[in-house]
Length: 182
Image (tube, rainbow, N blue to C red; front, side):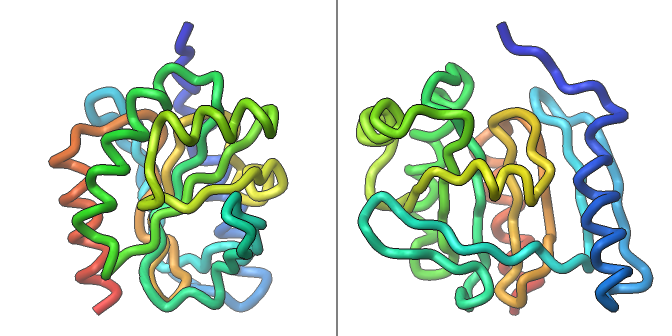
C-alpha cells in the first residue's frame, strides 16, 4: 500500500541541502517551497548546489554528477515499487524526446541487485541509465520512492517532487530546467 510521506518530512532534504550549502559557501538566499500537486508533493529548491556523487551504472560505466554538463533528471526507484513500475515507462518515453538535452538517471535503492536488473529491463530502455545507489539516496535525503530531482547543468537543484506527475507536468518541469540551464 502506498503511504504518502507526511508533509513535515518533505522539507528535510531541502533543509539538509540548505545547511550544507550555507556551510560550504553556497547560496545565501535559497528558496524552498512545498506544495501538493495531484499525486505528487513538490519541494522546489532554487539556488542550492546538488550533492556530488558517482554511481556505477548497470552498463559498466560510471556516472559522476559534477562531470555532467547537461541537466540531470534523477529518479529514485525500487524494483518492488508498483508506483515506480507505472512511472518509469513514462519517464523512458519522455527521455527519448530529451536525450540530446538532458541526462536521465534512475537510482535504484532498497533493492536486490538481481531483481533490480530484471525489473529495469522490463520497465525502461537505454534512454535511462541506472545503477544501485543506497548511499545516493542517503546523500539526497530520500526516504521513499519514487522521488525525483532535476539538477541544472551547473549542478544546482532546480526541482524536486515525491510521487508521480502527469507526463505533461514532467515535460513542463524539464523545459523550465532547460531554460534555467541556458
